Length: 199
Image 1 (cartoon, helix red, strand yellow):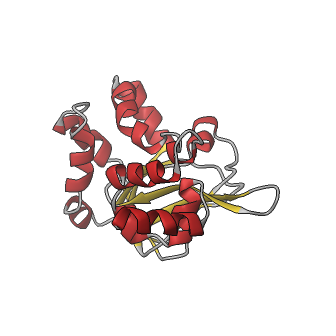
Image 2 (cartoon, rainbow, N blue to C red):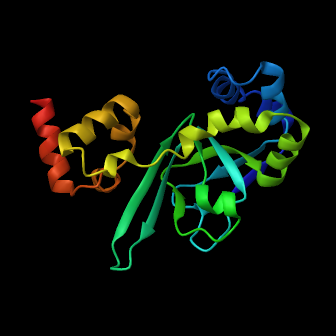
């Protein structure tokens, strides 16, 4: 993991973050700048872990480029994909960040990636300084939405169509087995669904 503190370089990449912060109508550009001024720029190589099980999540992350997967191992030894994130999305290990207790999952870079991080301490400083907490809540809701794709009330076809509507880039960025796990189905089922929808 490489850390860059060259402010000129970092500011040249802030457009995506500012757009993300402002598009919800939650923050003004000046307020968004309060956040971006506290960010750190990090780089991860494919296969590197942003968070490992047992570690405490102490940052929010904005993906400037690349992709990440959140996964865990069940008691029976099966690996489950809990979340998939791509460029211009916010991510964090929600329960660990809120409780400041050990994470029960991993977040791994699935490609060479660049992120900006906001620490829990800076987050608390922002909360103290203004009502940013409530406005930030609207922004970070997208990173903590429950995985509706794994709900049994949806058919495999409905899950895949929902993914196509909400996160179409996922289809191109991740292997079939990870997408299938994320959707709560087997790779074979996902393959049949894709063929059915395409035809």
